[in-house]
Image 1 (cartoon, rainbow, N blue to C red):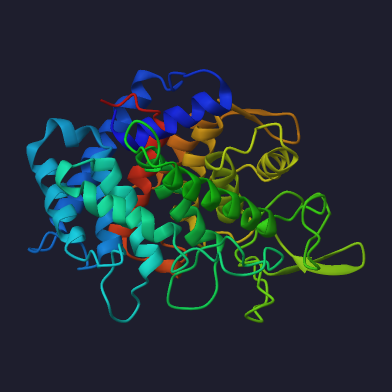
Image 2 (image 1 turned 90 degrees about the horizontal axis):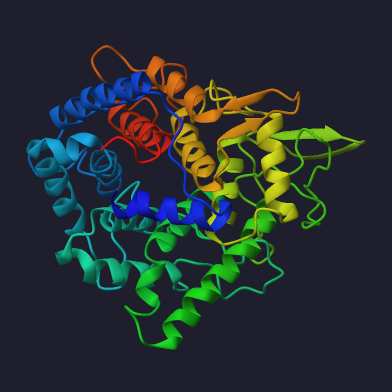
Length: 394
């Protein structure tokens, strides 16, 4: 089990108190292995001569993650070599300040650094350890995390793309995953400087403030956009706004009305992102914020779409949902009607049914957020299957 799945397992231990074997029967596991093999073959057929996919560090890092956690990575030398060439491409873009990104249009320092750091930490190659440490420091610095605002500002503690003056939950959740995977680097025995551990703790404290500002929960968030009706309570939005920058809060699910007032609607991908991030931030499972988010998930339980926005961002949603539920550590989700769902089985069946005969996945219903790009959606789908299998594939 590599560092990525090891982190998830450790978080399950902290959250649930025990480590479990994924409850997938052997026919499903065999189907997942076969599916991942076809997906890996497709991705290798699309790799550029320079080792990249789309000559883009973040997309390349995402593809590498999907290959590293696949059973083919250990059994097929060509898959491991392809991932290695991809990671070699990614590290070429390391900057003096620790960020990892390609300068130019549609290139975002924070997002690219976070995704690249997750991939490099998962691979755990000895030659990458210095760039990993510097990327981690960058994500905790004021150049990335909004730490120099008043704590009362809704943007405080968040992380954005890095080229515009606003943070959002999508970028923040990637950064927090990267920081969670590398947190050990600032702790004993790998680090003997207590100031480094203190810096890391402060970054997590700031992140917890931002997460609360993104949640549709009146008990902990008094923002004017918060909706307290059952359909939205506990869910998350994309961006809480910011008074210093004059930013308006935003939900990709738009506005709604409840109890005579308008607010922002919660939706699936950001709710799972917030839910997962709270667990990374070591907020206890019985905390009202975590329970409210899980209640939203129970109320809107489905993998057939991204709840609240339908087909938009479906594969991003699947990838995020698999990680979040795995970290939460509960094998069964009981929906609000009282129906139990063995989520891994439902999830695997859904994702396997979406694969094309050629081995790739793509969002036929909505190309928004680059989901018309089969290399990206295939990476998301493969990572989702690998996480749902719970580390039992190898």
